[in-house]
Image (cartoon, rainbow, N blue to C red; front, side):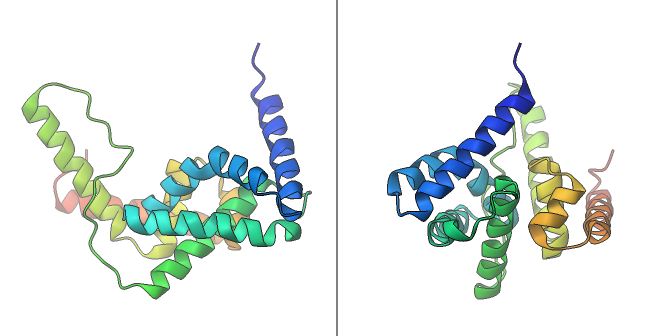
Length: 191
């Protein structure tokens, strides 16, 4: 039988070993770490920034930062928490450097699976409304919501990754959901 905790622990140990190798300048170890976590980093950055080009830039910055700072990683900390903190910081940096732009691409996690044209159009309109509503959230609320809803992180893990208190994370998530409900109700998409 598959033991998820054992697999997670093995991955964590493997990440630690890769970071030790990266700290000594091993570029192949960095490539292995990129292969393992690139999709997750790219998805989180895209959901926060709303643009693929920006997400790709941030993703590249994240792994460059890991290469530069691998020696500063504390093995007693969980790698994914450290990774999320780097992603969050790089996203904040990118947001500060660039003006807020409207989103133009559809969410990569949106599913289209039905063949009924009208149903598909309604679903796509709703997904677009949700995507725009999420994009309109204040940065802190959006980051907390994305990390919780899409990345599945606990409030405590988000707090550790962002440096916020658990109460601040909970408040951001509650406010984000309230704002989304309000915005979607205005657009008559709330159930």
